[in-house]
Image (cartoon, rainbow, N blue to C red; front, side, top):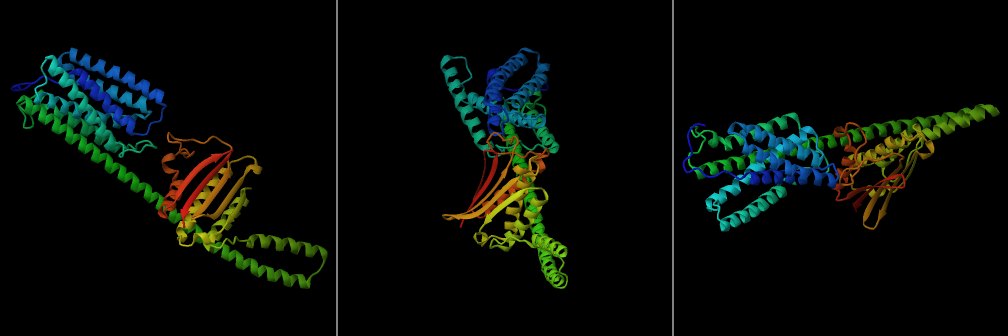
Length: 440
């Protein structure tokens, strides 16, 4: 150590530091997406508290050179506690533990600075009681405020997206914050060190606060970037659905014109040739043309195109699609939104239903009707497999690459929300039911 600290003050008690580290972990465990039962969370948290306390007292009993190793052990215990109590992966757990470590340093430093300022660090019974009361107040206020701030900075229904760049940045910020806040205890002969006891505590608290602020801003930026990327993906899917609608509309119109011409040609041929077998062949040809020219007539031209194209897709896959729709209820909704809303809903149903081995179970039902002051859109499809749900009960995508899928339902919610409506998804006796309510 280079130099000495004038009027050096006693350092934070090991028990207080351990309690601060444990509470910091609990703040983030309660704020992030938890993937394990509460029983496991409680057990891991209890064991984690005992482990962190043991590591702090072990560090205190060892020589000074063991200090850095002790801090690494404490950080490792926090990492394992977050992983086991919340069910995170290695990368996400490391990211959360780093943030918790800086938060713990800040609250512990702030409390001990107040203790020293109010001269409550003596061993007298009265001052020890006041110091304990201040501990409870500072920790309760500090960690409660941190939870209120951080709970809106993390998704409660999906894992925290932790890129390699984000993790490296967080670890670097944590190391620099910890090093700068404790620099005065290593050497006072630097431009960033304090030389007076109370001054050292000021520096440590201020640096820890700045570290927490930087980490919060970093997470907020990462969250905004992820939201923008998701919105861009949804918009790209909306545009794709709209382009699909335009292509389907052109194909259907072309088929309709061709079918109309063929009907006239068949009528002319029937007048010239009248053998029984030829008549039967012409009737079969006419039926095929009628099937090709069949179109839906719901009262909305955009919906007609979507239903017609999806019914043909269902026919190719052996799926029975039943649609009862009053397309006039969609007045005021843009053609892109109609195409994307119904296209996504039916595409999801077709994809799920086509996997059923029994063709009798390949059933899809669509209903569009008015109920009171609402327009109701209801899409149902039969399913015969286990559905995955997250901790909130919401259904999760069954595709392997979950990060790149699941935008169909998000797109539907996004469209319905634009018109002030809501989307609900539920299951009932092997029926998957998506319902959208849109105010009229």
